[in-house]
Image (tube, rainbow, N blue to C red; front, side, top):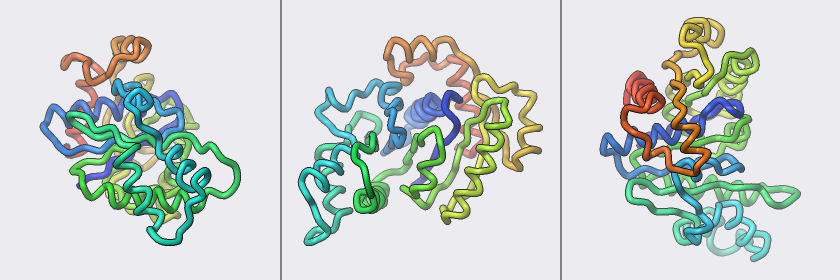
Length: 253
């Protein structure tokens, strides 16, 4: 089982990168795959053509509120993680032909979120055992790493743009991952579509991380997103898709 986490500042193209990674793994015949949208904006579902509400499903945050806030659930009896696991399977998981999909969603309540967070982590650990690949699309900041929703990761992909803030993001993300004791095998940097290919070596020198390449600009990606079409339907000769295929190969996939 492989866990791949994609992080990056807003607007770098990290969510489209996850969608195109999914397309690559599907076409390689990899299964089963679990996709986790950990971004409150829930853009990954849109880029994959999934509307949880129309499918009669709820985000994990909605299920947490339903269980522990509205339903006044406690730790007595069935452990919180087990209670959430069954609810995610029943009410939160979209089961597609090639992958399953869950969205963490927005934190709707004020105050401490310790119990729901613990429930989510426990449920995620159990759910993950059923899949060959887990792809996690993280929020634009570093919340996913700080929350330690998952602590064992194979590869972290940080999508960067040509700015000092992006390079600083790589440094902070790597430091946070180590300080909160997230186990990971590789920390890669990937250039977003605005990133000049020739800056790859400089990016490696500045960050100390391996640069895998950049996501090629593709006007079809923008058009598909604007029209609400799934990026899985992009043609196989799409420049963006071809560049992500090469990035995945360089990462050993």
